[in-house]
Length: 254
Image 1 (spheres, rainbow, N blue to C red):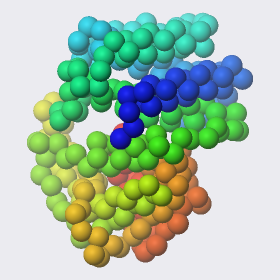
Image 2 (image 1 turned 90 degrees about the vertical axis):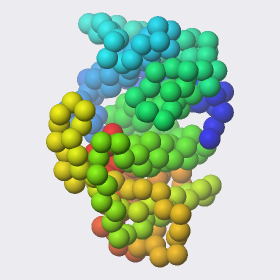
Image 3 (image 1 turned 90 degrees about the horizontal axis):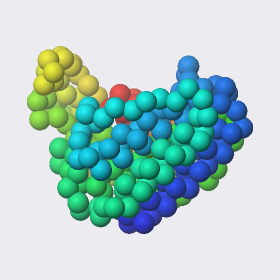
């Protein structure tokens, strides 16, 4: 996993790039977020920043935060929100206890990681709205793959009943590999919502029988999992429908 310094540097770089893209036009439609403009991306990301500042400074959960959205000067507001969050992060070390929505990781380090990937993806959104995209750091992207498969789709809620599938999918970047077994879960959430057959993929210890291997650079794999890239930049061996299953499972979890 990247260091705290690498995560914070990544947040800073991508936030600046997002602001640069926003200055080129807030009204541009975002192809990766249908119905959104760059202004929507700016406001969405800035609100997340201000909520994370409150989580870290006040020690509260997301539901206890309140943020006023801007009516003008959107980029300036975004940059201020970013600065406030980053300054708050710098008062913590990764192991400091902080509320998160992830039951098994209640530390500031969770948010350092989460905000690095959140900023990267929305920076790409803003840039693609103007027909461009800056390079993606391979170290951060590789960790983004791991976060997607371990935090978002690889962690079945404790209220759910798991149904293990029969297929193994392997993701391979130049730095790492992840073996995942297909599956689904059903159950009733603590709020009373009934969910049925939600697709998931769980870590698998063996790769003796792989039904689909997906290879690519860390950047290409990460952007594909997040719906910001397509299969044209990946190499698929085996059943391509399993690749589609994994992408769909990731999309539904985020």
